[in-house]
Image 1: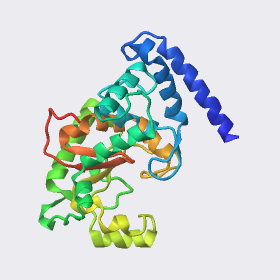
Image 2: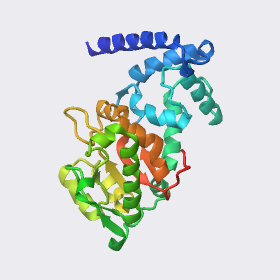
Image 3: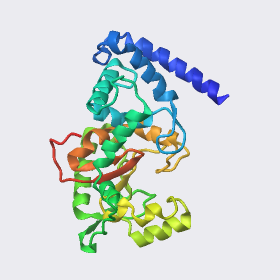
Image 4: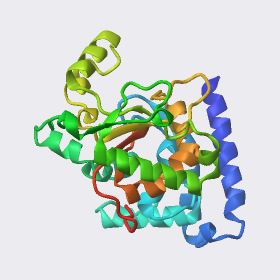
Length: 285
């Protein structure tokens, strides 16, 4: 039953995007060249059955904001311009420039995003960064703490960058300004021993593997409240939950602007960001 519903939804979306492709607008430039690819991407964005992180998912809309940022376009997945930009990316990175989203292209994108995380590169080298000295950690104030918080500490320079980022977001996005809960922190610095004990007790951290060396031990990783799907937790990794977060104005602002303040994303978790560089107003990933 659910497969037939999915097929119907995919067909409806393809037809809707087909109508949009005939409309005027900058995102529909070169529809005569990239129109078919745009329709195929529109269908796969919601109907592709794949397993980018091990478990089966349908569609790739949860990753669309990061992909659009990487392609330097605001045009949606079902547009000719998106297909054209994707083809350019594929060609630059040694892939067939089809303009079609596929798992191979995503793996190249994922590799680029991971390379921008110094913590990940350290782990590849077999290193586990030491926690910062306690005198380098600062406390969040109450208005920065989310109700579901695990910790209330961050490295001081990261906390300063976070505060600048939140001030900018509230000044630039009405939705964020209207809701003080958005961008609150529900996890920052986590002491490795305490984190390991928590994960072992709760059984929700991939055994002890993640707890033994989590990016949160560095005091540079923050889990930010970016919205919450009905009935789901603030850090639910269910595909529908992550897609819900990715559609929100808060996450989309972070994707476009967090780099200005030194933060880079973890693609699988819309709420997880890591501080990697000093504030740079000209920075654009």
